[in-house]
Amino acid sequence: MAAVMRQFLTYLRIECGLAANTLLAYEHDLKRLFEYAASRGVTSPGEIDALLLIEHGRWLHEQGLAGRSIGRHLSVMRVFCRFLTANGIVEEDPSELLESPRMWKRLPSVMHVKHVETLLASLDAGERLYLRDRALIELMYASGTRASEVCGIGEEDLFEDLRMVKVTGKGNHQRLVPVGVQAMRAIDDYRRELRPKLAREDRPTEALMLTRRGTAMDRIDVWNVVRKHSRQAGLKDVHPHTLRHSFATHLLAGGADLRVVQELLGHAKVTTTQIYTHVDHARLQSVIKKYHPRA
Image (cartoon, rainbow, N blue to C red; front, side, top):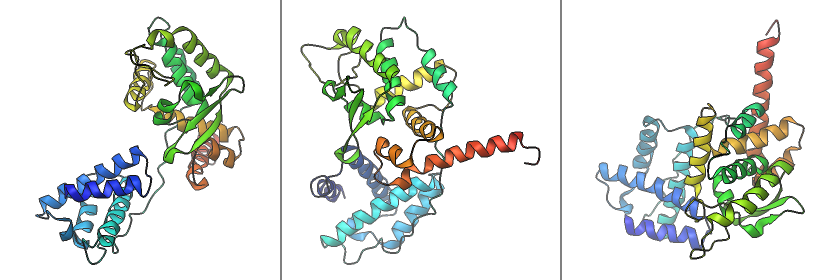
């Protein structure tokens, strides 16, 4: 199993050009499939059949996975089975009978504008990394960047005169995103006063956001920063993607064009961006329900 998985991941990386994070997701899902297969006595990829895949999907549902997560697992299984068929490991594609679970839309969590202000106001100016944390949160809310994207922003990706930042997203697709005055001011304060103190001569890096050790921040570092300060602010269920969701929803609520927001978020399909219009509609419905006398 392990050897075939390595071949499959190499195929995805070289032939399909999938990004590192996507490859990690594929590997994670395949390992779960292989573990389930082993529990059913299946130890060779050639023994994988439709019944095993269907039972695995049912098992994922029993584990409490959301429909979207199960759908991703099934997509990985389909691609893997096509790979097995193309390489003669199985004669017929066992995934042909698979049906995706109904992909209900789960509305993303969004912060109210005043909660964003509360989060920023909760930062302690006396902390050593205050300037970095403020610049990080301001930038993510101002640009709608993913955690992995903000980690990939380098010094050379900032265009201060234009108030723009170059972001490299999924599939190494690049986009230019405008950054507001307050976020750019926070970034400038961080770059001028703190980043030179964090940077190390023996481990130089062009990354904009640095850890206290002088290395480039990763997604876990970003997650920990947002979680730490949101808890201090008394806010629940706030994570890096919440800032991205809030960025998009607040723009649309303010009248921004859907296609513009799609471009800013780096979405390949506008249907992905449309979920944020439903968030705003849900907010409006709650207002009507609360205040209309016959709601």
